[in-house]
Structures are given as structure tokens and as C-alpha cells.
Length: 316
Image 1: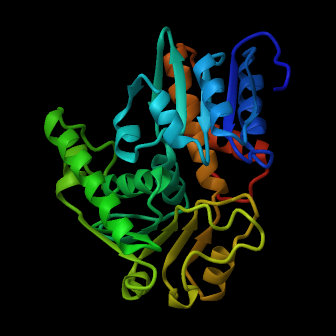
Image 2: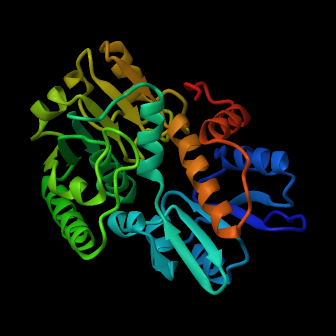
């Protein structure tokens, strides 16, 4: 582990994470704020080593990426609804003797796409994947107003079981708590996001028509992290007018993004902008719990962190 300066310690936990832009983004913010906080990599190839790291709790906060979101969810002693629904946490914050888990994947994805001019109200959205990232994005799209949400996987039955379990958790939370109101025009309340959209499942081979008719297609799988990775599905199904989002950013322009642009899609983005929007959400969560004031708007934070990372993405 890298030697830390005095002050709070914050990390990105995963494997591999050498490519991560998170340290440069967060450290730029903390330097601007004059905080003695240091953000570093926690790269562990073995699950047991990652578990020991989390159990030690020698940090203020940890951002979590593949493959340790389920582990972080287990480690959390308190879990926000976003983490409960996704069954995975990508943010852990230590508060006294508690470890609070959140999931900002979906919030980051939707906020970035909305920043880029994409609207979800009344749209048909396909989300590829069945892990915590996919479920977090599925939920955020439902909140943002999507009418039809289709969860796709290589295995149709896997998608079916994951979606059923997600909807069961969602229903219990929606009916057991006071409804959280919509946070912006065109979005839904928490309960409306459960009752209003139509949720469906399928596979890349059995739902080809849905892929072709979707307004927005989002890849929430790790496929694309390596430069020679294929697209997660047959990109010959893409058509002009669609918006394509790939949560992966590690290899630059992924095969999915390249093929989407070649197919004439309205827009195609890799995960750089989503990562920045997630970082903004995470920074605000941590500062709130740590009782540290950030004197910048979300737009200013986005631009600061995107510039630090050097991402070529729309600015706020």
C-alpha cells in the first residue's frame, strides 16, 4: 500500500485498478479544498486480501469497483436503498462505528447522459448485465422516467431470476417506507419508479428486436475493459437515432462505442463521463457524512474532476 500523508485516507478498491482515474480526480478536489486528505489505489487480486482491507477500516471512505461490490455490500453495517436494490455497494463511508454503503453507479450514468442532453421520460431502455452496476442503472433509469426497461444477459434465465429478485426487493422498500419525491421535473418518486415502468428481461440472442427498437442501450458489463474485447451483443442490431452508453472506459473507445458510431447512432459514450458523475455524487456523500462543506455546485465539481482526469466528454 502506498504511504499516506497525515489526514484522512480514501481509496479505490478493486482489481485491476492501475488504470483508474479516481485518484487524480479526488486529489484535485481535495487540493482545491485545502483538505489534508489523500486518495490512493487499493489493488487486491485476492478476495481474502480485499476483505482484510475492508475489515481494518483504516479509511474515511472507499470507492469500490469490479469485482468487489458484493463484498463491500456485505461489509456495510448500514445500507442505503441504492445499495440494497443493487445488492452491491460502490461507496463505503466510515461514520463512528458504522460502515455505510451506497451505490452511485446508476445516478452517475443517468446524470451524465442528462448532462449530454439525453432524456429518459417515455423511453425504452435496454440495460446489459445482471450485476450490481446493471441493477443500479436500471433503477436510476426508472427514476428518470423510462417507460420500458429491459434487463439483458447472455443467459435469459439468469436475467429473469435477477430481475425478479430486484423487483421483490424494490416492492418491499417501496411499500415499507415514506415515498421519496421526484428530485427534478420529469423524474419519478421512489414508489412511482416501482409502479409505473414496465420491466422485462431477455438475452442477447432472444431479444434482438428489443435491442433494435430501444431508444437507449447501456452496457453495464465489464466487456470492453480490454482493448481486444468484443461488443457484448451483435452491434448489427443498432440503428440511427439510438443513444448508446458503455459504462467501460478503461480501453478508451470500446468496440461497442465504435460500432455504434459507425451504425449512425445519435450518440455513443464510453464510461468516462459516468465515472466523473459518480465521483461527484461520492464526494458529496462523503463530505456530508464527514461534515465538510464543499463550496461548489455539482456542475462546478463535474468540470473540475473531468478536467483533472482529462476526459473528452461533455462539460456541465
